[in-house]
Image 1 (cartoon, rainbow, N blue to C red):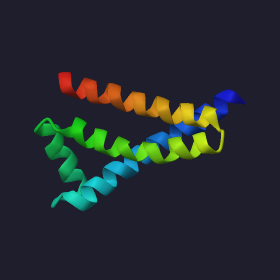
Image 2 (spheres, rainbow, N blue to C red):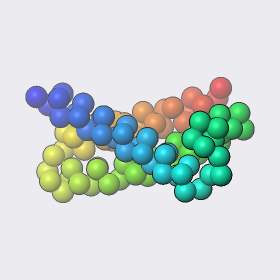
Image 3 (cartoon, rainbow, N blue to C red):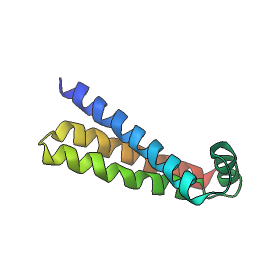
Image 4 (tube, helix red, strand yellow):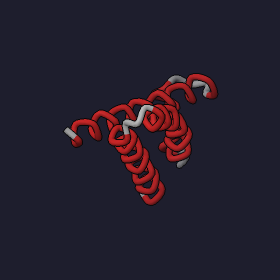
Length: 93
């Protein structure tokens, strides 16, 4: 049961991050989503876009904490840590 709640939180964290990336590109980029991501990968600022998208993870994290759903909050935190690892990998490749 605990693993299920952590997994749900993890998926919500990934979706929140993806939504944050989408909203950032929608608001601040003149190009479409795919072109922006390709340009960011080519010019080494994809990690910055991922990090800005991860800001949206604060919302579900604090909602889960407020509702005393700590295992789902832990899943969101794990998704955020995964994004940090992805950012580190993109920096070194």
